[in-house]
Every structure is written in C-alpha cells, then in structure tokens.
Length: 214
Length: 378
Image (cartoon, rainbow over all chains, first blue to last red; front, side, top):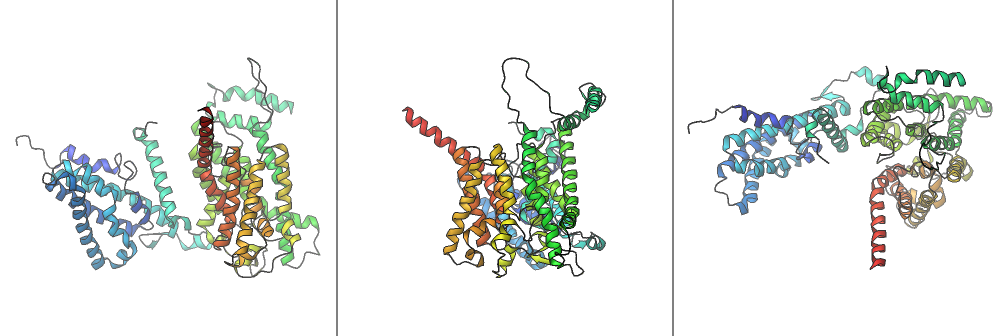
C-alpha cells in the first residue's frame, strides 16, 4: 500500500459532487421518481425523507461493500434486500419515536424506501464493485443529490400550494385579501412530476452534454 | 393601405439577415403576414396551391366561434338583469353592453399573455410566429366562468402555452389542446372558482350567484330549464358554451368550409347519446335520469364536440381513427359526468384523455391496414 489515496482526494470528492448536478439520481439517472412525487408537498417531510434515505443508502452501501466478496452473485438481490429492509425498519422506528407527526405524514413512504430505485441501483452499480469508504461517499453523494431535488421541488410546491415554507406562512395575508389563492394543483402529485420535468428542462438547457443522442 | 405597404417594404431590410434588427425577424414577419396576404409564389416547375393556409384556417374557426361568442356576451348581461328582476326594463343594447364590458378583459388578458409568450418563444428558437394562438386565445375566455379573476386566467394561459404547447415544439406539435389545458389547470388549481356548485351571475351586494343546470342536478334539484332555454342557451354557465344553437351554427360553418372533421363531430354526439341511453337504464344518481338528448345540450358537451374535439392537431388523423376517437370522447364525457358527480364537466377530461390516446389509435389503424394488405399479398 504505497500510493494510498487520501480519504478526501479529488476523485473521492467527485463521488459526492457529481450526483448533485451532472449525475443527479433523479434528473439524470431518472431513478427514485416515485418517492419524489409523494413526499414533496411540503419541505419538512422532504427533508426528513432525505435524511432517512441518506442513512439507509450510506450504511447499506458500506455493509454490502464489506460483504461484496462473500455474497454469491445469484442471491445478491436477496441479501441486499435484507440489509436494506433491516435499516429501513430502524429508520421507521426512530421516526415513530422522535418525529411522530412527520412519520404519520410520510406514512408508507418510509417503508417504501426499501423499493426506492436509488438504493438498489447504487448497491448494484457501485457498492458491489467498490471499497467501503468509496461506497460510503457514493451513498452520501447520491442521497444528497436526491435530497437537493426533493427540497427544490418541495420548496416550490409548498410555497405556491400552501403559501408556507417549513410550515411558516410566507405569503402575506394582504395578498389573500386581494384575491390571491393557493394553487391546489401544486399539492397534487402530477404537479411534482411537472416541476421535476421543468427542472430537467432547465438543467439540460444549461448543460448540453446531458441531452441524449436521438 | 398602399402607403402602409410602402412603409413595410422600406423597413423590411432592417429585419432581414444582416439587418439592424435581425433578431426581431420572426416578430416582423408575423406582423407583416397579419397585415398582408403573404405573396410568396413558387418560382420553378408547375405548382398548384390551395389558397387555404394556416392564417385562413384559423380565421374561419374564429369566425365560426362568433355566434357563440356574441350570444355568450348577451347571455352574461341577460343572466345579470334577470337575477336583478330588471330584464323588462332594460334594452337589448344595454344588456349586450354589460356583457361586453365583462367579457372584454378576459379576451384582452388571453391575447396579451398568450401572444407575448408565443412571440418570445418564437424569437428565442428562431421559429416563425404562426397563427395557432388566434383560435386558442379566443377559445380560452369562452370556456371560463365570467368572474374568473384575471390573474388566474393569466397564470393558466402561461401554463397552457408553455407546458401544453411550446414545450412540445409549438403550434402543430402539441399533444393536448392548449385551451383545455388552461381550463384543467384552473379547475384543479383554484377549485373554488371552477367546480363550485354555483356560477357568478350578478354584482349584487350579497354577491348573488346561481347554480348551473348541471350543478343543480348534483344537488338533487331536477327542475330543469325547459328545452327552449337549454337549446338556445339562456342558462348560467361558462361564457361560450351555453347556447347549443349558436354552437351548431359554428359547426355548420366549419363543416361547409371543410375545416373541421364531420366524422369526429358526428361520432362525439353519437357516443354521448349512446352513453346517455345506457345510463338511463341504470339508477346511479340524479344525472342518470336526465333524458338522453338533454345530456348533449348540458354543460360544455356541444362546445367541446364542435370546437375542441375537432382540433386537427390533437385529434386522430386516420379516418377510422376519427370515428373511434370521437365516439370514445362522447362516451367518456357522459360516463365521467354521471358516475363522478364531482366532475360534472366530463367533456374537458374526456377530450384530454382521448388527446392522449389519439396517436395510439392511429398507430393501430395504420398497423391493421398494413397487415390487411400483407395478407392480400400472400
């Protein structure tokens, strides 16, 4: 081990920064859309969801990466599922204990982290072939990318849909007196899809490399 | 006119390539085409041109909308003065003028917002501005309630034009009918404006509003207006859609000029009538007890069938496809109206859903044809 890379070398940091923009799990890899539609009506659940996914993804990445040489490839999906499922149960119990109202709001979507494509996708694509530390960074990076998008989407949805941010009213009362109304469509999941679509549009028009060849 | 022509010719070089205002070329061309008949002619070979171009098509549709529009304007005033019990004391022009004053801001907002976005996006992409919005801009106010706040209208139009049309590549490329996208947007975004049980009629101190016949039925009130009022449209409702009679005049204009497809229009009514007969046999709720022909007169059914379903861009293109497309629109519209009373205006959803399926229908019609011919071959 002569030329050991430092823990936060440039290449390693890319694992965190790439998923934030040009390799974003939602807008570029287009995985994990379903939960992004479901939990983004308000910012608070979106943030909690981000941290839950971060916990599950980072740890399961590390665990699978440790086990990567011992898992027979035929049953690797089952092993991955067991690891992810146990972590999700931990998260779920934790949320129920300390953030009861938010966990009520998120309802089944915490449990559905198991089926979140980002987690299985990263386990398959990265953790199975890389060392634990890299897998950990990849997990953090991807969940941050996921969270970034969740927060952007939920910011607009909460602002226009409920007139609040993090539960605090930001659109002044006098607007409502003049006839302003909250946009009910923003609360509905279709608008989350449209918002994500618009973000993808903006991102690709800024970064032409992302546009797929026809 | 001649001096205008001379003026346009004089400033034209500025807007062509290499000119001072090169960037504004498409804007300039749009205004030139608006003022004068385009004088482009073919130079080589023998060509036969039909004089009908997009500009003329759109103009005819707007013309066909006129009866419904004029009646809609009159009806605004009529409903207003009836509710005030003053209908016998005011003259025709007073009624009409009142409606006109209420209607005008909607049209102005519609065109200003819509055309601004159209021009801007054409400019950005270097496309030519085309006439597609002339019809959409007229349709949108006609399918709105009279009292829709102008800012909501503006937001809905911006949404419809950008996400319903420009994102797909502008006029002729859109999947959904932009006017209906605007209405669906308001319907879901501001339900208090659109899907309440009552529609605005008059500015009285206690903000009087009356129920449309459709929403009356939802409340279990089966006292329908008589056939005459329903057919000629003396009922509260969205501006352009109340008078089936005026809509049929428009339909006649569209059919004679060959702009709209008879196949679609006919099969929409057929599908609607068929479904109404079917639900008459059931006893789901009050809606299912309405006589079948009245279903076709109520709400936006006729308006949708004549002006929305026949939109050549979003409808099916194949002949058989047009029958299927139209029939399913009529069928779905009545089905949604009857089975889900929360959405009495099923026409909007029916057309949007079928817009989505139109390419699929066409695909299978074309495939079936190919298979049939292949079989004949072998």
